[in-house]
Image (cartoon, rainbow, N blue to C red; front, side):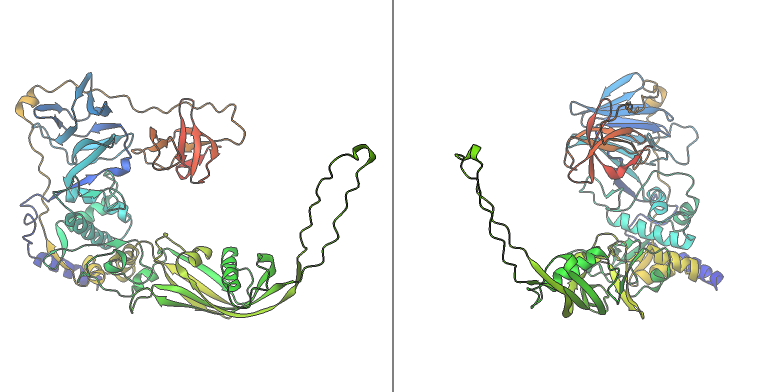
Length: 580
């Protein structure tokens, strides 16, 4: 059966007609380009590059220079201008610098482009650098087929089944091409705001195969490219775009359907909570939420509000109600719970003791008597007694889910189910991401356990989408200007790599500790800010393995105050690891 499905998949691909909305058939025309803002590099005023092939630098109206491959160069902002450091030369490039790949007549490399230092992997495209808000803005222009080599193994994982990776390649290609807009400075960003894009490494062989075997295949709907949304896990039911994004069109390629494959996959993220029927061992935050709701009920005014004066004796029923959208949506928004509770009533206060009188000693008989404080009435509480059985409707989002630790991504869109056993009610939440379109975990399960092809996976998640063929030829790299090839610019030599700052740890201030910057990639950096806020002025970039002395945790515990021997500021603690 699997062999037949693969034969059918190949036959269908062979019958797909060219789509005139793009360049043409694979191999005859180069694949379309996309422009990607490399936001995750988190650049400030400097960028260090290693060239994996010959590059022509261009600036202003007539500025041009050929830089041989294998060299390292630096681009830095000085007084608002871009300065290109290449060997012994420092070139004023003004407001814009373009670094384009060229051929000089020698053997052409299979993958040419740039490596951002410190780091590994190649960005296979042409780079445009400008200044935006006082910082470098790098935009990479590259073939969509090369772009996918840096998307597929990071949106999924290279060890996913090949057919799931193929489905991912088609979705990612369609998504990218649908966002091309010549009126904007770039089409995509390299983060989850669009699609994760990383420099390309040779180790991602299966993903590369998936891109190659689906070259040029795109999804269409209504005569144009479809909006191929996808997410990690949908929690057992696909979602509609209009339910997630205000104003989104009700595309014909989507449907709201149950997804058994996502539920089957043990890798799909789920969270669980147990509410025992005897009311014992309830999560403290949930018990507080329940108590606050019950104290608002009629007749509870006489009961003490403190947690120690409240007890859940029995949970009799739990149900999930009020779907956010019309049937068959299972995205519920309320929890109805019936619970029997006990509490302690506030009894009439005891009569306070008469105030003490002031009798001055003979030595200070002339002193003005100090006023005596009237003691506060002593509150008297009764014993625990049944307060009643209450049926409450608690909002699931966000309070109840957070109180039960069922929130997964913070998007307040989890699908929650409840099952009853003899001793408890068990709640399970699922959905990581928006849930629209393909579930990556569902696709993994379909390919791995059910032998589904990528066409069958796409048909399940996009029932109204057609697959068509677009141009998929290799990127065309122009030949260098012969004059520049004969007389290249100054020989480029390695530029100084960023060095880590020294940190003296012999005499640490009280309560301080030593940490290392580890939560960034080798080709990225962490901003040291003047204030504990994302809006704080950036003082400098901290590279991976930079040691820091953490002086204190800020009022917002997400931030910490740090210093080295030569700099001081604030960083987010999540990027640090303690050094023993």
